[in-house]
Length: 328
Length: 59
Image 1 (cartoon, chains in turn cyan, purple):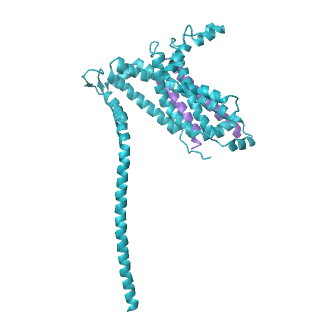
Image 2 (cartoon, chains in turn purple, green):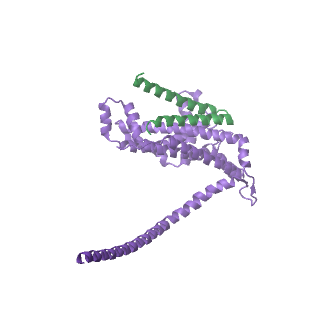
Image 3 (tube, helix red, strand yellow):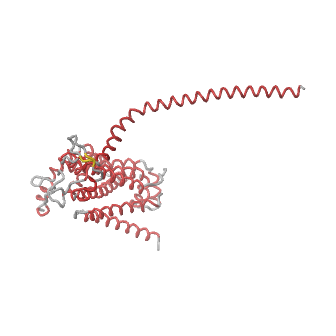
C-alpha cells in the first residue's frame, strides 16, 4: 500500500507543481506579451515623427509628380485638366527633350567614368606611393567639395571667359592662339566644359573615400604579394580593387543619382542650358517647362522620365556590381 | 593558350569594348534624335554589361 500510495502522492504533488509552473509560466507569458506590446508601442512612437516627415516630404511629393504628369496645369490657375498620357506622347515629338536626354546620358557616362577612374588612380597613388606633401594634395583636391556648386560655377565661368579667362589667357601666353575657344558659347564643346567642372567638383570627395578604404587594407597583404612577385598594377587589380569593392559599389550607385542632380545646378548657373539648348539636361529642361513655361504637367512628365531613368540605372549598377564582401 | 596570354587578351578585349562604348556615346550625341539616344543607351548598356562580366567571377 505504502509502495502504491507513495507514487500517488508523488503524482499528485507533481500535478500540483506542474499546475503551479503552468500558472506561473502563463502569467510570465502574459507579462512578456504585455511588455512586448509596450516595447512595440514605444518603438512606434519613436519612429512616428520620422515616418510622418518621410511620408509628407518624400512619398506625397513623389506620388504627386506621378499624378500631376497626367494633367495640364499652368502652375498658378485653378484650372486643372486631366489629359491621361498626353504629356508623355508629347515628349516623343519634343526634339529639345531628346537633346536634353542625350546630354544627360552623355554627362552621366563621361563624368562617371572619368571621375571614378581618376579618383581610384589618385587614391592608389596617394596611399601606396610615399609622395612628398600628399596631405597637401589631398587637401587641395578636397577643397572643391567644400565649396558651393554655384561658387564652382562662378569660378569656371571666369576660367572659361572668352577674353580674360584663365584658359584662353594661358593659351595666348603660350602662343597657342589657334587653340582658343569660346568654351561656354560653342555648341560642340559647351557640354564638355560643364563636364570638366563636374569632375573637378566631385573628384576630391571620392578620392578621399577610396583612400580611407585603401588605408584599412593590412600592409602584410601587400608585402606577401610583393614577395610573390606582384607588380604595383597587379596589386591594384588583384588586391586593392577587390578589397575596396563594397565602397566602390556604393559610391558608383550614389554617383549616378548625384551626377543627374549636379548637372542641373552647374548647367543652370554656368550656361542656363545654352547656347540654343545645346547644354540642356533633363532636370533643367523640366524646371524650364514647369516653372518658366507654365507647363507644370508636362514638366512633371519629364520628372517621371528622370525618376524612372535614374532608378533603372542605379538598379542596374547595383546588380552589376553585387558580390560577396571579402573579409580581411 | 597560356593563362597569362589569355588574361592579357581578355583585358585588351574589355578595354577595347569599353573604349568603343564610350566613343559610341560621345559620337552619337552630335546628332539629335531618338535613334542617336538609343545608340547612346546601347553604349551605356554595353558598359554595364562589361562591369557585370568583370564582376561575375567574384560573385
